[in-house]
Length: 295
Image 1 (cartoon, rainbow, N blue to C red):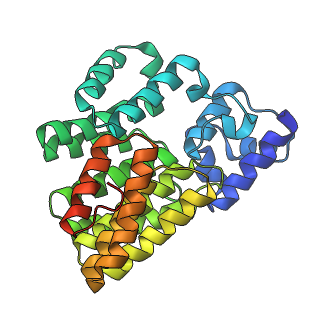
Image 2: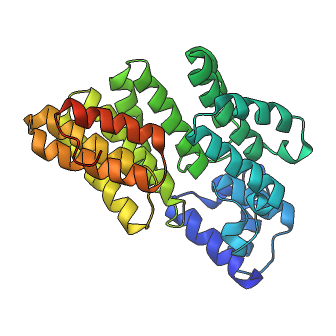
């Protein structure tokens, strides 16, 4: 493992076009980075941890397995928060966040960042407190020690939440601007990041484009989201994307039959994954168009 750490550090540094001096700042000397990259010395755990944070990855990137999020308890909390946000159980999210803020395991900045991010989402959707939500999001972003040339996957997720809330409050142009920034940042991410990030950001971009009346662009984003879901063999946001494509087709062409095809695909998927609330919503939209073929 150790003989490859220097190669991996150099590969990622060059990927982001970061100079050795920039990577070394506040961590070690430029000469030390040079020796590490030449595999002439093995970085100690502190230096490697700081380098990983600077490059926007966790230590799993260098070790191949094991990371802060692999600690079972931390990973369970992370997964629970993601599940609860997706289920829109924001009160429970806030309860867990409050509890874990006092947990020493979550005193590391990159884990504290996750709590602030999830808290911001919940504060907005529970109380519609936009100002507080943005305060939490930008506070979370400040905890990421990357450079101006690179971003971590979590940073991109937080930016996506900021964009989504701008869209929710009607600031659609601002949301679109942030989504464009996100897509540029995503192109620079290492290839092994969680595909769900790209899926949800592309889907949210479709929704935002639809509300901007850019229906053709919305359909294009839907197609990209569907392809991402199929490529990665996941149903994640797929039902929502089918429905969004139908809505955008209807708005663009008023072709009810084509829209119904996508609505019915969405309904079938929601039934398959037992999402009753979403399925009922889609069914009602189908009925409005005069069809109950899958009712």
